[in-house]
Amino acid sequence: MMQYGSRAMAFYILSADPKSDVGKRLHMMYKVMQQSRKAFRLGKSATYAKKLQALAHNKALPEWQKSLQFIQNVGMFGFFVCDNMVFASHAKLLHFDAEETARRGGVMWFCANMAGFFSAVDSLNADVEKEKCVRDILASEDDAARVEALQIQLEALRSGRFKKLLAVLKVTCDLIVSSNTSGVRLAERITGSKLHDGIIGSVGCVSAAVVLYNAWPNAPKKALPAGDKSDSK
Image (cartoon, rainbow, N blue to C red; front, side):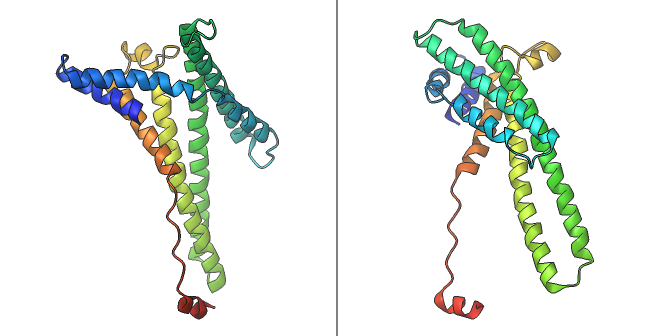
């Protein structure tokens, strides 16, 4: 959030006033955050190796979803390996062509986000279809116990749909950011110019906000008073 927020604010402030001291400081903050984040991502590719292992043993997923998740996890694995290599190169620990490595990492990140986007949309559509089926059954159901069970199922689907909408939003934002990397340059290839830092920073903030929302702990459920518990039995 700090990295992309400072990136967007620096762009807009410096666009209005190129000599702005605040804008220059924000731009410097963005650059520092961009590099410092890489230190915390060392070895993160191992988590995707674990996901690939779990995916290989998952028999419940449809083949289409399994293929998309495989591409996504392989892409993210490769991206973080390249990201770690770039960090090691900048830290003078290893000697790599940092620019070329970053370019390849950007391509893998973009491919991962493409697969992630289609996977998220497919998962969301599947839930929408399930919700529609439950509504149709609920409309013609008379049994009280069955109606209650269907309503609980419907509520769970609604909750899941919101989370999957957020997943689509996040991966869309990540897709936009990754499409602007040096190895992809999608906007530049189409329009002749890259997306500026104001757009990338703003989109990155939305993605970070979704991550923060998902990571935010749920409020603990209030326990029923003793009297209410006895009444509910």
